[in-house]
Image 1: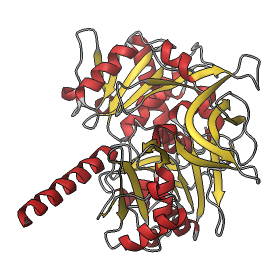
Image 2: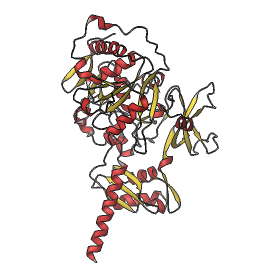
Image 3: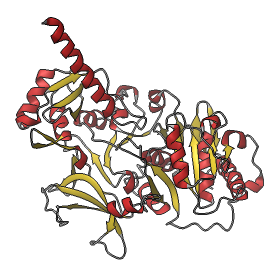
Image 4: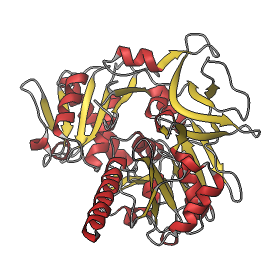
Length: 481
């Protein structure tokens, strides 16, 4: 270890050095082995953001097991039960104050990480556990999808997958010793692994946030976030930030322009199944905001309905190939067979993943994201891409952010931010750029765009707001008659 006295992480006034983090992880790794955990097993990591969380992650990896992260207090109890059942976990790593919220069976055992690391490490803890069979194809972690559209599915992410994005440019984000990297995302979200391992792999210091995201962001050199989270921050207060990387949902052009004016700004894309992100663009003003090019050792195929490659400018469905492609879904071979296919272009037993994202190649060899296939809706019999509507609304000078949803078979509803957005001007932009059936029937200016626990737009809540607004308008009309 080059810098054992370097600060690995800082959290709510507490710090841990790289040397102590390594020693405590070795202590815990040996304890896990004594508890019967073996290479290839799954260890539940049901915690909150904390320094003990890092010890649990590293200890699990040191013995060749895979950790399964969930944020206790945010993840519903029934989902924790589902995850432990599917993953067949026997050991749960947690914090002492959270243990009572974990639905254990008689065959499962909790280890309280915060209590465990109170015991001082020793010289004997300098050495990694010996004899563990770990390879590039060993699982690193299993990430369960949010479950907003059904039962959560566990995506099996390998060591090779993770190293490929974090140890190559631009995915390494130029992180180096002396940098401070924010850990602001939900640990069950794949981008949190980008924050944590992207930092620790390069000897930087991880700033683990408390409840105040802004207070942490203002101290960071590198920020990784969703557009929805970044939009809550004030750029003028984040003068230390020199690199921002966004992914998870479409980035509004005004947001990109605001941050790219003073720091390196990366717009990235990739579902959990392609290991955090598999395309990135270094966005510079003035320029076209895209999702960039495939990251090293990865490919993207834009295919038509017949599975043939689309020409530049021709829209199609994006399939991901290369080292980003994960090892399939845990305990769900049917879904794995549906979404993962043999890669006919790379061959040699390689796999590709169906992203269900629409895209097209530009003449400059970059990818334009055209929305999710799931976000293509029928309005009055016409096909409408919801992201295209939002982009048109955001072209209005007073609109910083827009979210468009299907209200019913004839109507769209859009939410624009901030509340001072000129709705008439935003509607006019939409009418100028899109067909009449794409123009939202209802446009509501809001004080904030609500977020899910993973930092993405809470579309379910927005639809509830729209329904409540319609009911209020209906009641007002009846009262006026």
